[in-house]
Amino acid sequence: MKIIVGIILFSIVFTLEGKDDISFRYGVLGRLQSQNKQVIELQDSSKIQTDDEIRLNVGYEKETHLYVIYQASQGGEYILLYPEESNAVVNMVDLPDTLYKTVLHWTPFSDPIGFETFYFINSSFVLENLSNLFKRYNKVNEKGKKKLAKKIQNELDNLDPESKQELASISGRLDKPVVGGVAFRGDDGDGLKDMSLTHSCTGNLGIAYKKFILNHQ
Image (cartoon, rainbow, N blue to C red; front, side, top):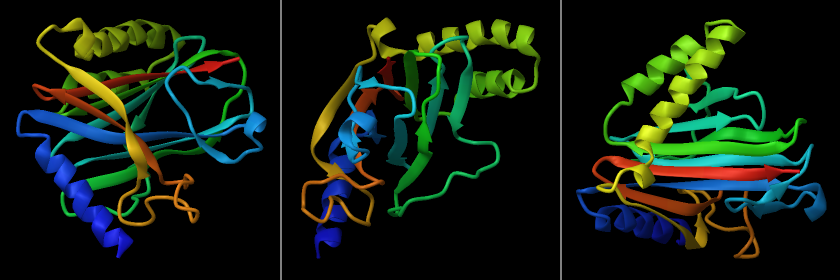
């Protein structure tokens, strides 16, 4: 009964956002040494250490296009975590109009330390320029990667709603962790599970954009 109610409420949220809005849900979860490796919710600017593990979950409407990009703390390396060319990402439980994915399974951080950056972008249209840049980026040598890294960053900056007065992006914490169709909370009613989604991001004019930084110390 809880699952059915949760699905209905989740569907209503997407409907109420309006035709001109676009949104997605995400969860950046951590298993930190300082927290005895229990699953916790990470916030933008949270502090993490080497060997701490993180997991990324997303939920978005099927007719939209979600991109998740990682920028390493040093060296300027970029990784397109989602969508993967191999389509190897495992589905969570989908609703008729919504996709749920784990775009990064539990993965530990290694040195060097610095700011680990993740970009979550949901678009009503295919971001062909960004996709093509990553296709080239993954095939060139280190010198070529450095040149393309600048173009990738420029593309990300151009999509950032903070640099466009006509776009608005809102990111806020949900009242309760939400998960698609399986278990919305832990057995105790409030705990987090591996598939939990904890935040929402809403934009308009076809773009919802969230830059999420972890302070790797």
